[in-house]
Length: 618
Ligand SMILES: *[C@@H]1O[C@H](CO)[C@@H](O)[C@H](O)[C@H]1NC(C)=O
Ligand SMILES: *[C@@H]1O[C@H](CO)[C@@H](O)[C@H](O)[C@H]1NC(C)=O
Ligand SMILES: *[C@@H]1O[C@H](CO)[C@@H](O)[C@H](O)[C@H]1NC(C)=O
Ligand SMILES: *[C@@H]1O[C@H](CO)[C@@H](O)[C@H](O)[C@H]1NC(C)=O
Ligand SMILES: [Mg+2]
Image 1 (cartoon, rainbow, N blue to C red):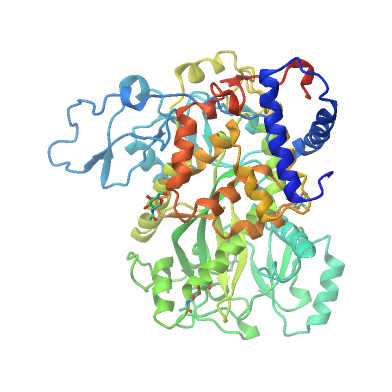
Image 2 (image 1 turned 90 degrees about the vertical axis):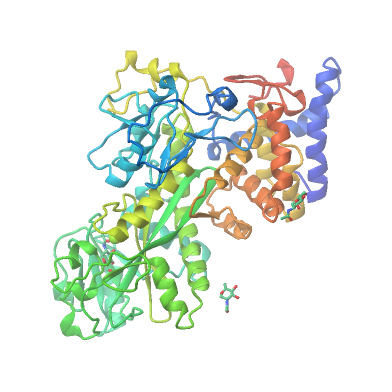
């Protein structure tokens, strides 16, 4: 970097911006060579940094003027007069002008207004064999119809798939996975990636997972650790890609080690926190709406799953799965297993997370502190997957709109109430065996779908693409149209490079990122503010007022994370000013790039830089 102090750097950026405006007026002016040189050095950096940034993945926001839609549709009540559920509008308007509304999803106690037939016809959901009932019920209340056809759907809740499969997803379609999340969803990858973080950032920050070995690769290391820790040490062994507790065992003799490889071997957390003598773990629901910028949400409730047999540290009991495992699939086979249908009660072998907080709170435990530590684990673990997911996203997806993902984090509390991560599930069970499950998972899925922000596409987006479909990689067809999305404008690249190349950027310097907002800045900030209005019982944990400290854990620092972090620091306390600033910018169409040359010229779908042709860098 050529910049000496932050302050002069900020000044230069403003100079760059002003220079561009000067160009607008006096294009023929000569002798810009010195300035051009400094610009060019920024642009060189841009090219390097592009590998880390979204390459022009711009939704061409479709505009639905909400006021033009009929406010209420006159339809005879098909369910009869006794249906006195409150009716809710089908669309949630954006906070901002010229941004389309999103679809509303209700709880069972509400019903959703019908959209006009023309739009209702577009509400198609692709069914998969793994689509859980809570999802089916929630989308049905918003009048989605299930489709078997592979191309005309808006949403799908299905299996994870290989990365190239994502290429076939259309711009108006949303699937409940990101490519590459198996980097944390498979047990062996999770430990590898977390260990890598531990090696880089130290045990102080990354000490929430037990020492782990992946066999066969780590067999020598394991042998040594095994000898060093003595015969009292217990180990838990897990097949790397199993689920529901299958193949999990606790052992303490080398001879008990299965021959079958690959295998994950971990130091067993042998002193769990016990309630009434039983071991338990927590299922925490984590939802990511976007990986660049990274936005992570955590659901305020969850499940507490108990082992169905009282815990003993005796070596003789190691074979008892009802004692050492908490998986429901294992413990339901125990005749002692008791169900619980009450989300307030501390009874049976499954509780609501909120019931656990009450139980512990009543015993003088600071549960806020435990919750803070869990959030810390979640943020760091998601960040560990971030470089991988983002590079696959950029290779395989037309737009970031198409991906979102729910993760099930399994967390255990040790005797000192320190949380440890056990695993991350990329397809957490949404089966609802009991009223407790229905109440928690139902609310969670409903809030999640609102947060997801489903939009109604323009008709031609849905109908055109598949007429000539010949996708061989996947049955998820829908995106064969030519890509119309251009790269970022040169101006935006300059700004991004500028903020990413500062080595010793302090808060004063970084805060200048908000001084001149580009169209894409405005679009993303508006999108993020809108998301915050649809939280339900989710809480956003990244970015948050205190999340700046996590930026250093990113392998590759990203402009949009800096932007959102600065925005959050400035506005978290009172969002009114920020929202009214964005409102006025959106009113002018800045986020569409269609007006206001001060924020660069860009047409929807086709953007041009304000630089004269000979001044183009890319
Ligand atoms: C089953 O329970 C054990 C012990 O509580 C845990 O380590 C493991 O990750 C669980 N497995 C699954 C697939 O949930
Ligand atoms: C509990 O922990 C939180 C988070 O560290 C802290 O802010 C709060 O003051 C603590 N509460 C009590 C009662 O100690
Ligand atoms: C995680 O670990 C796997 C296997 O070692 C590696 O291929 C991958 O690049 C890692 N992912 C990240 C995000 O570092
Ligand atoms: C937030 O700021 C606005 C204007 O800046 C002010 O009118 C409002 O009272 C503030 N709200 C709170 C809760 O402080
Ligand atoms: Mg599990």
